[in-house]
Every structure is written in structure tokens, then in C-alpha cells.
Image (cartoon, rainbow, N blue to C red; front, side, top):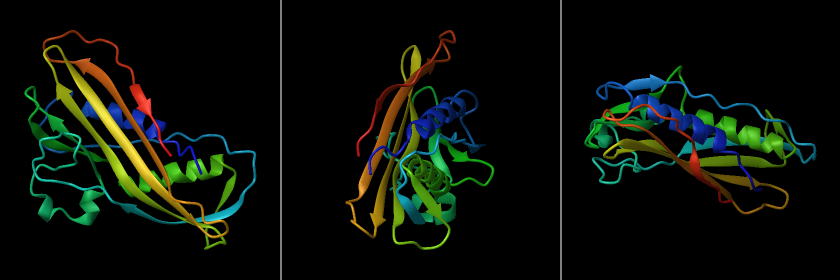
Length: 205
């Protein structure tokens, strides 16, 4: 199945990245993320049970690449429950990673991914079943991260969202990979506030 919608989450993730780097960059910032509803598809494909949604993101200690997930501390001491809430890092004017950016209101990355996949399945005409059905789906969250890179006069904010959906039963289609990347620019402390826009969106499946 093609077309898992990640654009809405990407846009919100970019917004949180901008917000998370617009004030004090120390300490942890918790911000909720909202995924808007979309119309249900007209083609009926029958029931499907959405099972396990797993956070497969790989965190590293002090990576050189800001797109690699990290925390303000030792990744080895990070609990699975806490890991599921982290979505970015705050950075100072020199690009040094500082405090964490986490989801708020009890949200988790697997929980948001479940909402995204539920939306996509319904948009493709599936009816979500609350009990195991002939078709079942599992989801791996491969990417869900936002970061900022400071420049001389502005800051580039980037985000990446990627999931792998596997549907079993009936025809057993191959796993479907869906990803989106995007960027926007904001002001640096020395430049006036200007407009920002999402750009560079791309998807694969």
C-alpha cells in the first residue's frame, strides 16, 4: 500500500523544532503534537487489525550529525518509555546540542505513528478492527526527529519522519516504507523575524 501520510506530522515536527530553539536552549522542553484528521477513503478493502507499533530509532551519544537522535545525557541510561517521548534537541548559536525536546501531554512517538497509520489505512478504505482480523498490520518507526543548524544570518530547521508498515494475511504484500523530509528557515538572534515555509518534502513507499 502506498501513500502513508507523514506530511502533517512533519509540518508539526518542524514547528516544534522552531519553537524549541527560539528561546532558552537549556533544560527539557515538552510540547504536544497534533495530527489532523483526513477524509475516509471511498474504496472498501475490509477490516484490518493494527497491532504492534515499535520505536526502532537508533540514539547515539554526542553524534556529529544533528539528524541522528541523541539526548542531553547518556543514551545507555535512557529507558524505553522515556526514549519514546524524545523528538529533537535544542541547540545554541554555535550549533552545540543542549536540552531535549520531548512530546507533551503523555504523547509518545509510537502513539503518534499509530494515529498516522490509522489515518492512512482508513484513507485507503480499510476499516480498523479492535480484534485480530484476516489482515493485520504492524509498524516500525524508523525516523521521527527534528533538528536545527545555525548559520550566519538564519537557522535552518529540518525534520524527518519515516515508518515501515507490514500487512500480513490474504495477499501478504511486501512491507511499505513511507518517509518525508522537510526544512524551513528561521531567524538567527542577529536577523529580523521573517516568514518560514516548509520545503523539500519527499516521499517514498
